[in-house]
Image 1 (cartoon, one colour):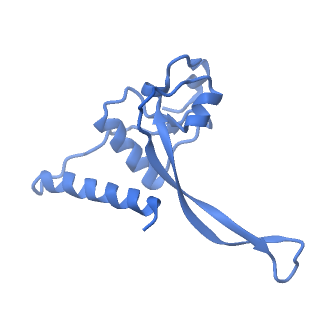
Image 2 (cartoon, one colour; image 1 turned 90 degrees about the vertical axis):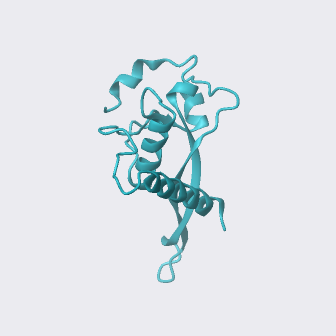
Length: 138
């Protein structure tokens, strides 16, 4: 099994055990109204990434749901604390191949499920110029 599928399976098991521990009584396991956002692109995370990052924000009691990859924090002059563990996010990467009709053009032949790790602003915010973070939607 791929690492990406392992991350998704681990997360689904974590959610299932959390829901089972409530003994049939539903309790919200993430912050309401929280919108995990990428600090570099100012885009909100969606889908399963939204759920995973919201859950992580709640569990680790982060002050803000702002995340970015190690390289993105470096480009923003941030420094991830040594020993910090990132949160995996998943995305699809297109597979391009030459068109059978017109070989000079490339067409999408499918997608591959990939993962990356992102870090919250709390362990990555050292030395960070936070002036642009005001433009991130709440």
